[in-house]
Image (tube, rainbow, N blue to C red; front, top):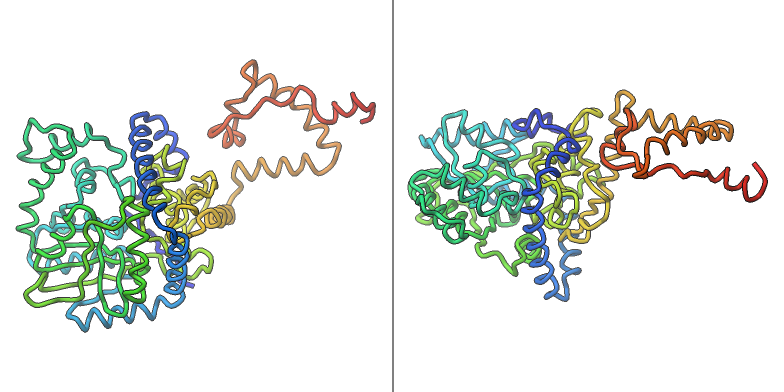
Length: 484
């Protein structure tokens, strides 16, 4: 079995566990207001356009079936994709991990003599830390998606698949532009149109001068070698057509077998992500066309732990994800904590199962071990997922993996062992009941216990313990039936 990538998110080393990060996020009332407003708006838009389709569930099942078929024969489809891209003048590179992918891209950029690149929004290049790798090689990378630009200018990290700056409001964005964007009008207001115009003026010079463009992939069609990128602003179209060299980094799971399969996902994706009937800009290209678009096209196929996920018959469902963000928008945990609390490139419910599978869980102190618990298991993510990924079941499976990774007893293990000992015999259980009086004293008038020492602090750090009842069942039975 392939082993997980050792550290595909190496540029995020030092990240803290979800419980610690979530506590801090919950204390940020402005963040919660921003997230609540944005997710409610997206949910409402999505519900409206989904309700228009009588065959929505059939489309979901079709997407699920296509993805399952793709994963069952992924190696052969990737080989077919490579052959078709090569036939049409493109060059395909295979990257086992983030380091290799970054090295390929850096070498390709250096070969052009360019010292700056323009980028289309790409989760894959965030995963590999490409911007940092390019900066280390003396190459400046300019994000051209508006939300990604906001994140980059503020030296921040994305918090959402679709809306990376979802945690920012208009006033905050205005301040970022005034502080970080050269030649911006000092009279800039926080009106969305004015902010967009400021970003457009800032980026236009880069579009016209850049020799190299870098993109991600939404879908790649194996039988034609066609790459597809969908976006809402038109910046992608500029990056994909104006530079002389185009480098595309693609997670290997993004392939689909045929054009007919692509049709299904181009209906599912916009409704589930932006709440639109179709994407404003859907760009497709096949290799290199003389006199039209880039003169060179390079496709970097990225594994980076995906083979390990593929090897798990149940876990491979996570690779079906089309990055629509619908599960984030309906998740009550994400809505309150935001994406940064997950400490992963892939936040939300799907990130909570994908990241641990890609990188592995090495022990109880591994931050990935906390991610599967960042969920109420309410099932809203499955209901919203356009390709019917059973995220709740995957979360439970990853919780089991986190428990199996324990190399030494944790607080929870000790507490459960103590409970097992107490419940082994009636006599022990009766002795344990005598301690309930202490619990009532700790609860006091408020009727709940908010703080307990380790290992029980693992519970009270996240929730209160109700005061024990004044009378146990045994005591009630003895009082009402005269028996013990």
